[in-house]
Amino acid sequence: MSERIVIIEDDQGVRFFLEEALKGEGYSVSSFESYEDAYRSIGNNTDLVIIDINLPGMDGLSATTDLKKKYDVPILIITAYGTKKNALEAIKRGATDFFVKPILLDELKVMLKRVLGTRRLKKEVEHLREKELASHIFHGVVGKSLQMKDIFKDVEKIADKGLSVLITGETGAGKEEIARLVHILSKRRGEFVVVNCASIPDNLLESELFGYEKGAFTGAVQQKAGKFEVANDGTIVLDEIGEMSPYLQAKLLRVVEKQEIEHLGSTKTKKVDIRVVSTTNRVLENEIKEGKFREDLFFRLAQIHIRIPPLRERSDDIDVLVDYVLHNIERETGRVMTVSEDAMEVLTKYPWPGNARELIGTIKRASIMCDGDVIGLDDLPLHLRADHPLTTGSTYSDQSLDDAISSLEKGMILDALKKSQGSQAKAAKLLGISERSMWYRVKKYEIEI
Ligand SMILES: Nc1ncnc2c1ncn2[C@@H]1O[C@H](COP(=O)(O)OP(=O)(O)OP(=O)(O)O)[C@@H](O)[C@H]1O
Ligand SMILES: [Mg+2]
Image (tube, rainbow, N blue to C red; front, side):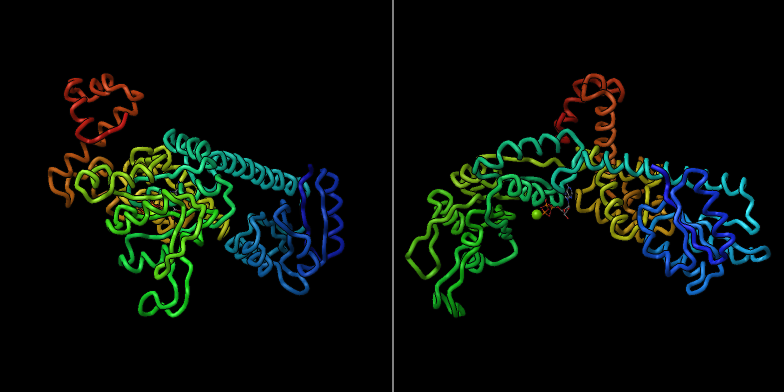
């Protein structure tokens, strides 16, 4: 398909000359006398705008500013001899280049080839980047690592089976995202309801979940449906289930066993059809040992158990998450940004205690701090580097010596394991330690091979 060029020039002679010349080169050309006339013909599929500076109505400079705000289209300025200052101003406003009247056809052709060639390349790169990114987004959830791809597969398998799902993982690892995925893929027609079991006191949580009759307690001025009813035919997410009191654990067990509920202040039971997904960053098995969580409830809630590994154990997800954030910024603001190599290295090595949430927030803030379109080391918060002597070459940090040594040790072991494709024997050799001592450290840091 030929490239689409819009010409805006009020001098009929020049306009005619340009239009014929460019059509002769095989471009698809439309020309106008003023920006106001041309405006509606310009869009994201326009490949180039050629615009005169002196125009009736809005002048070429203001038009450049206006266009650049809306479209990512290259602009060439035509300027009369001796008004180079204007042309430079146009470039400041985002025009790609300018040429001076009288127009020399050969010069113009070369410039067009260059500008349109660059645009074509840029589009191709963008297209590839988008395709690559799209292949790692599953219903809005980002994941390129084998671990995340496996989770996607598992969710697909179990989503419409009606089994209860327990999702565990550190804070910010994406438990709620995966819960949403379970709901979407389940094709259950009802609502997706999230209840946080940690943020409200026990008696409030009870009335929130079960609903109540008028007069059931002081303040119950009218009947209210509980979240279990709202989630009927849908999915209820019991967020931070590990915080639930023994009393409510017992009540919950009855709901999941019998699929029926009673309002507070009523003895009438109501049938419900709900899929329960629970999430927690605690290790419930330990809570059970300590007598804080009911074992029978655990088995009811964890018919399927999905463990989301912390981001530092699936570092392949880091660059796609970064791309994903940058892509969203581009969609929202039109700003095309990238991350410098050294900044990317720091992002890949940092252990991300706040997981995906922390990474996403960091990139969003860095994009605001950043003056140009390349996020560099300087745009990243200091602690990403300061904690990690390895990434900065600095040997001082405000951690205790033991912590610093542990984090260095773990980082090096993970690196070596990656380089040796998970072979502990090879990794041990790389690090100059015995296999036995490697095995001990892998256990100590709970590294999953
Ligand atoms: N794989 C992912 N793809 C896209 N966004 C993600 C992903 N993982 C996490 N996020 C985003 O990071 C933030 C935190 O995710 P989420 O709320 O699912 O974490 P969580 O494990 O439930 O955390 P918490 O334990 O603190 O509740 C959200 O804004 C979420 O959209
Ligand atoms: Mg959550």
